[in-house]
Image 1 (cartoon, rainbow, N blue to C red):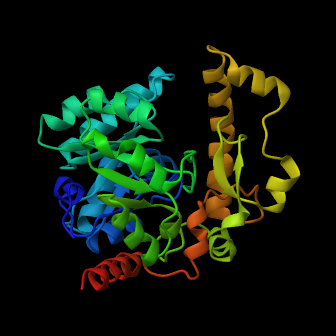
Image 2 (cartoon, one colour):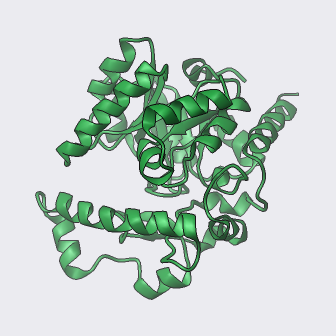
Length: 326
């Protein structure tokens, strides 16, 4: 199926393996792209979880596949040191031939300028019309529509309603959230989306280096086991309900909540939560249930019943789309 998104991304199957901290390892990214979808490089995962210099990590992926890969650029401006590092990472990605970028959490205009200069494309994560319009004003080529069924930082709107809210903006829309099986993939494209983005489904694959406990938790979980916690980043994040989650709760404390509501202090509180949770997420994801288990996942767990090769996921989705077309 050819869509505006597949033309922008130069891929065969309108499917993205979303960038995931800490689960985006080079082997997973390459496997998805090699099968006809698009794997997305997450630079923090690449360097600080899986131990690859970014440039060498991209070259490792290139040795595994010659198909296109994308790059995730979080462009939030509250931490200047981080933003400076992101600018260097983007330059490296461009030098290594990456031409599809997904931005999030800030004004993407400077990324658009750099990427468009070499003929690439930029899509931006959005959860509602306000942020979608701002991203389009910044020059992006398409929108990653994060709905209420997504893992990680989920939106608040169901997939169909979000499509209807954004469909008149004239940009390709990619459905992000709730896609765990071929039927859901076909349904999303049937709504009018130009593509889909999956995260949780690709954690439960053989190429992903997440711990077996994490993968098993995804296979066992049902949609009702997904809860939102404020204790990872200060804003609601979708995770699997575990004994640890039930023990510590999902709401920020009184002082933290007041700081999160303050115009200036909220950035410091979110940074505190993020630094604390990044380490916990990394330990739980890579070392299993003996550690504090924040297992990020979306409601797509309902359609995931086995750990399979990532290429098989892409193939099964492609085949389901072909069967529907026939």
